[in-house]
Image (cartoon, rainbow, N blue to C red; front, top):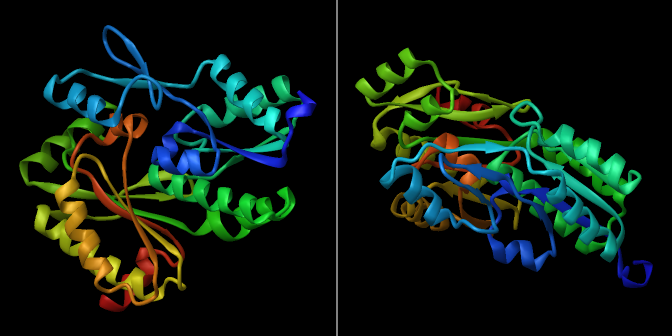
Amino acid sequence: MEGKITKKLTLIADSSCDLPVEIIEQYDIEIVPVSIFFPDETRTQYIDITTEEFFKMISEDDLKATTGVPAPKRFKQAFDNALEKSEEAIMLTLSKDLSGIWSSSVLHAKNMTDNKVTVIDDRTTTSPHGLVTMKTARMIEEGLTKEDIIDKLQNEIIPNVQLNAFVGTLKYLKRSGRIATLQHILGELFHFKPLITIEDGKLESPMRVRGESASMEYLMKLGEKVVKVLPKRETLIILHSRNFEKAKILYDFLQNLNYNNLEILTWEIGPAIGVHVGPGALGLTWVGVSASELLESDK
């Protein structure tokens, strides 16, 4: 194994990071894939189910789906692959308040790698998790040490990663137990769309708007402020679930305001998180000032 080592550090992430395959391949990121359980079969994100197939199964076919912590063999495969290429590895996981993946990763890293894999809870999920992962991959590519990377993650990036998104329907949050039945009924009845954020690793809903046009207006107003304050060549992600048309409208709007040469990317939410949000979600994620601070002046 030692003869194959070509670098000091490799990055590992669980598949709820929802990174596009081309980015995973570009930065040689090892993925621990999440299992998706349907009534009659089990599929695995990035392995035997595409995002398109998944959303067809839960929406058109109306199949109920749940997720589970990856099997130990999935961790072992990713750890072995990483340590064949490098002396050590960093693994980023979604928030431990949202899943048992972090605790399983810590246990398996200790037992399977003699602590050569450092596990970090990045306190978020889906595209924000992917953005933290991509930033970490770029730091590795730049040659930063493990200690410097961890310091930047814990003190600069993770505390400031932001998510503001609206779901297309409350059906899937209700199905997965994320909202109470009464809230679901009232929300659907009055066409309310809750704003979804992540605060200190937990899902929050600080406000809601009524209807598609109001949610798009909110995201455009927020996006305009984010574009103005982010430093040059920083990254802004438009995230969505099977909501290509609205994502394109938002992308075009923000790109027209992009005087700081920001990297504006559009990423789709994958199966592990799509179980909870369903199709139709749309939002923004970035590292920097929070939405509440940016929109404070409008109150």
